[in-house]
Amino acid sequence: MGAVLRGVRHSQVSLQVEQRVEPTKKAAQIIHKKLSACLQSQSGLDAEKRTKKLPLMMLSMSMAESLKDFDGDSPIRRVLEMCCFMQTLLAKTLADFEVQLEKEVLEPLNKLSEEDLPEILKNKKQFAKLTTDWLNARGSLAAFRHATAVVVEVRSSETSVSLQDQYSADLYHFSTKQDEYSSYFTRLLELQADYHQKSLSFLERNLTELKENHSQSGPLLSGSFKPVYGQPLLSHLLDSGREIAAPIQECIHMLLNTGMQEEGLFRLAAAASVVKRLKHSLDGGSVDHSEFSSDPHAVAGALKSYLRELPEPLMTFDLYDEWFKAVSERELSDRVGRLREVLRKLPAENYNNLRYLIQFLARLSEQQAVNKMTPSNVAIVLGPNLLWPKMEGENVTFDMASASSVQVVSVIEPLIQHAGSLFPEGIASLHAFYLQLSDRQRALPPLTSLSFSPFLEVDFKVPELPGNSDLTSSQSLPCVADPHSCTDPSITPLADRY
Image (cartoon, rainbow, N blue to C red):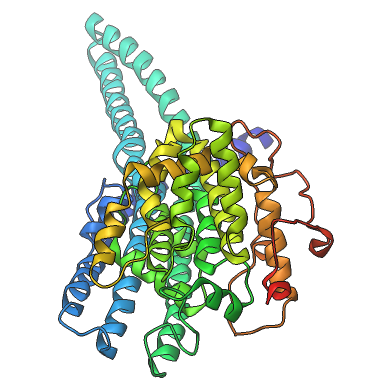
């Protein structure tokens, strides 16, 4: 009796599972079709190509085109610039969402409705047909007792049993996968929630900034902060309480994390709108690294622009001739020695910033097999931004352009090649220097309300580079626990000098 009841219950469960197959297929087909229609970009494209075709990107391009007709001081232009930037970021976020949605929801639903379930239903139909044939054969056998009917009965019976086993296996597989099929719809909601949260967070953050700055007089994002670009190095450092200029320190930090293996860094141009946005952020005193780290060429462009727009080159007008005399020495050891002497003549603020930059460039050139930026290539693209003669009037632009001559390369290239010797602190201590600066800046009295994120607060990790096994993310760096106990004769604090 118990066996009979179990058999009945098993048959009922099988029937229930069997009745779910067709509705599941229908639901998967309809939802796949309607959800695909919700996509704003063409399916099958990667995120970058999708972004270009999205209506939001078209809107951003229209805004960028429209703002060209306004003068630089127009409040409408300033707001349009911010809106253009925001629409571009929203388009990228939407493209990423649609790529993920297609991969994790649409493709599984399509496979379920067009491959998995149709196969089950096909086996069901064949099994039903063979069952009917078998019953007909039995009827024929009973009525006519013909030999052919016997053969049909036997063959139909064997095929029917085989298909019955396959169909039962299909139903069992379907019953075990129902929770997985349900998870496709749960995943849809999770992806939507994540997309909307990211978009909302980005909009709220930037909209607040836009409203605050739009309500104030002066350029967008500048507020009451003093500008950084185009200002004398010493003036910026004293105003901000820094020892390393904000664009140099912030840009190098981002490039260390994402740009060391980027081919053609400092050589390839970035989107002008992104570079401009980063410069505005640096001028405004707040940089969100997550917004710009994904575009190393824009970060490198902002750094080059800062060096180029300094009223006096980082390597100074006064020492212009001495740099070339130093590299005119015939022997390498003599050239390095003369360069070291000229370095000692730099003002403290220039030396600190040049050292910080050159040690980074030395680290960058170590990756030349990947990024193609040898010391010579780096010197060619950055030389004109570090050293040019003092000129008056319209000749300044001409001479900065001609500064990419062999002479300037002959000065910058050995600085990068022999950074470890010319700066006795060594390249390995560059990261400790980053952390030391951040701690020291927090200890200084605030001279302005500038609020750059210190490196320690963003959990800065030392990237491990080939050939630098002594630099690992888990290694304890010197001078970090107590930055003021680390004496570095090459770093002259501005507070002690002025």
